Length: 285
Image (cartoon, rainbow, N blue to C red; front, side, top):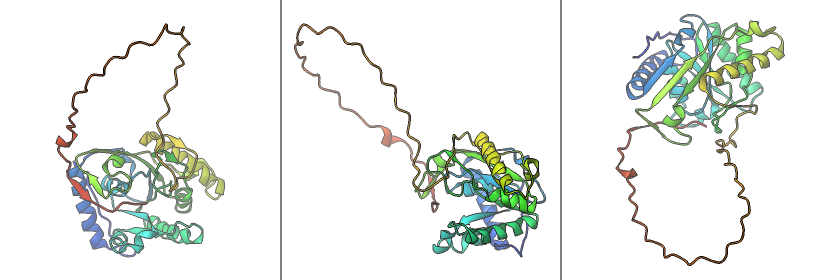
């Protein structure tokens, strides 16, 4: 069942209200019709006032399923490279995406200033605290942007952990597999003032570490204390332990060889499986 949704007009903020209204409505109906979606903790999202939505990031479609699970319109940070692609340079900003230059420093601060304006207006803003998609499938060390925004605006941070989006759209795949399960879990809000002086820069790191711990509880991911990067790869399965066999007494002589029996021809039945329908969509970084 699709949760109730309230669209908030905001003509003074990034995005086109008309495009965003019909865009969010269409995405929500499509998601709840084509996927088995389970939403937990939606009561933790305030129905009025500002809040920072902070999910884990595994797949491009995270930016589809998390907003589709929410009861209100949301603005979000998006990589600046989207502005270089004709397919996304107009649509994503119209939906409320705020492009960010990921080289950091003053360039990134411009996006955070715009995000603060969204929160000061009493709206929801979504940011991935890992900064980019996790290619290792682990939960990585968080960057302090969300905590600094919370300290600046007084908005609570809502940790989010989702499960299933990686199977729906694996890395570098242009299609989203339908009829698969997806769970989005919203955790209890985190308030910066509960963890130290909001004006103390060290508080931002304390809050960020707390945030990543809560996200890990919600998503079930293993945490690694390194920043996510493009060179990461999925964690390899642990090697099986080697079993040593004690030396035996030498055999009295070679055994006569036994002719090998011809193996029965194998039949691959996997091609008989019914293919799932797919939806074409552009991947993220």
